[in-house]
Image 1 (cartoon, helix red, strand yellow):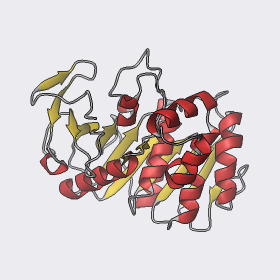
Image 2: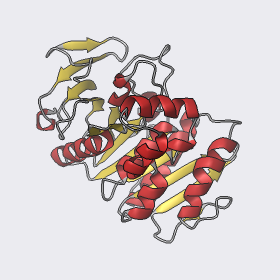
Image 3: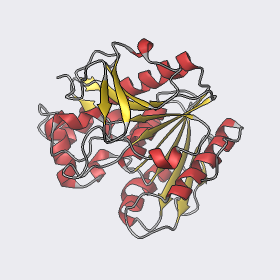
Length: 300
């Protein structure tokens, strides 16, 4: 299937107040644009899901990539670009990627940028990010998101050597999330699988980040911020990830590689995104620590 967001050469996204461009390949992307714009481009793999993103080019060595979390489909329309206002003050190029997997089912709230049985969408997004960074000269790539967007940042950063993921209370295994959401996802994206168990067994590295991070080399960096008052995500997602990395979940800190940092913090009750200021502060801290350079901010 080709995404419904396929557009003519000249179109306008009223909701995000940007023009929309349709490209034939990543090599056509405009890195000299002086204003933000949205683009739709085929995935390098040739899979059925196109990639839709909002891009703000900038003369900077840093590219920040943002991913969104769960969407209430009756409230939000696709494509969804999250954290745009929060990232606006930062002196970096910015790319906001929508999860095209959600086009597979109008009632699907979350798909973790996984794609489906025909396409590893997260790998296609990783390829696009690498293409953009190479073409525009971005030397530092920082990926970020909260909840399902945090899952995506962890999964995709793992495929980009030298990149950093800054995630907030993410899921680390699809099967440990809300059963109804998980069932809708795998029934839609992997209809040939008789059960979730079989789907994860077949596509384990795409569904289970604890497995992904234990079975692949540590070539990226991670700052994993967990709200300790979000007991569900703390117990089901954060603590198992921490233990798999040999870190005390209560204390946090770095693992033996010196690349994975866990930051437990007591914030608001339940599963909520971080405040705008806290979100930026962690990105600035991670950028300084992992890339050895301060990232300018207007302080807004």
